[in-house]
Length: 441
Image: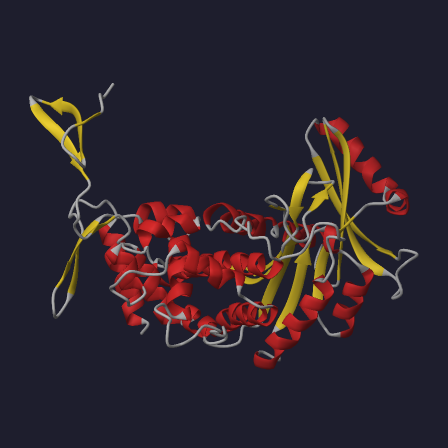
């Protein structure tokens, strides 16, 4: 074991190596452990995310007394999340980190935690709507031309509440006090992060949000085919009817009830017989037409999967307007599972669960800050790392492998110089990422 003892003020002495002392000292020099924040800054300049967002946030402060602009505070907060700093208290130190200051184009002390806290708690509902619109704009602008088809995946998740907060309720399924935000993705693009209380139906507001989203996307891409994909928790007749009236295809999960079980009895029996013959798990697919008593639009196509294994029978079904073989349609639906990996990135890597303000709009704003951090990290992955072996990495891997790198910063009258060790393991990837972003300007 290493013995750790304090020696001179500000210096730590560790167990020696080959008769030489090992000392650690925290020096008053411009050294950073976050040199990769420059890539976050660069990709933000390319896609214009925080600049567009800040233009819709009203500055209600006395302009003769302000020191930190809205855009600077927004960038400071989002870049810190990108670099893994989820807590406002982290900014006690970060505000004096030269790398962070340079990233927001302000080489002087940045906003304090209390200033950032007031910033968050002064956000209005209209400003959160503006921030949400910028996310969709960023998605649309990421395409050079209108795609032939897009698949929109939607799913709610739990977000643990912290004490006596607005709209803090116990959720029976998740078994704790939480919020129930709704996230909507298209591939790895995050389109919507909408905070909701947890004492509601999981499909609450999905129809309204999809109506706004589809109409907005079609203003730019009128001929693009839109497919909605979700699990059974978002399968509601009024939502599906709107899709059918507005030429939006859908493929959603559905709960197998007694009528569907009866209608697929022969299919399950065949699966059981095949299992007895082969001893291997059997999966048989078919389609039927079914209408629930509460549906107002008549029969819909139901794809069923009859599975039989050593665990017994397992019947699953989905509802869709798409045309293909039942097996292909079911496998196409199962691909929605990748969206859950994107939600994990947002929650675990971008700290979307830090909705610990008391006020509702402040918590919605915090959720959007994490969403913006995800968008920047995903943009680095998509634009800067497209021809590297990190192109499919998670946000956490990109951060730890590429962004969390030490550097000595030297500032002169003509340049800002970051000196990174030549033994940095990912130096070639870092250089490639920087070049890819420079070419996009």
